[in-house]
Amino acid sequence: MNEFYPMQTGKYIIYQLDSLVYVAFGTRDTTIRYQVKYETDSLIQDNLGRSAYRVFRFIRKNENENWTPDATFMSIATNNQVEFVENNLRFIKLKSPIVNGFSWKGNSFIDTYSANSPVRYLDNWDYTYESVGESQLIGSNTIENCISILQRDEVIGLPDQPDSYSEINYSKEVYAKGIGLVYKKFNHKEYQPNNGGYVAEGSYGITLTMIDHN
Image (cartoon, rainbow, N blue to C red):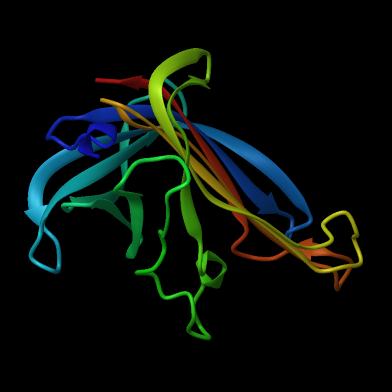
């Protein structure tokens, strides 16, 4: 399993990041483009006393700018799964066995049920392996021996009807052997029809496409 999520100090992957945001009080969307680099730093311990790697994220507008530190994450590999902690949310990114059709509750560590939880839309997601061992076109490059994980593909309500409530949740990740995460697409959009119609606060989307790695 670790061959699809290699963790060692100095390992990095650079992505093109397309960030979908909603502006003008949720009445208009725009996409902002960045480059981000995820770099594995030192071996530490998580709050359960387990070995973990700290991961730094750096950001820049384009290759002509210097990298700026942006965020810190944590990766943990156990005997049968890989966890990733982001913004105090613990995701189970990979789980054994890696075979087509195998699924697991990837967000089971996350509080999605409290009334004040800001991520209730993450509840009960089934992560499912697809296209195990196949090549994938990532950006302009064909990458061999990948696995896809469909995490959510959900439509609630009638998104084509402006007078109706709707919600869209979509998430998919692709990992490549010997590299790690090479592609991610995520979209959470909640539409409220009142007051002329608007996209609710907390809606956003991101697309990560690998452009370089070591």
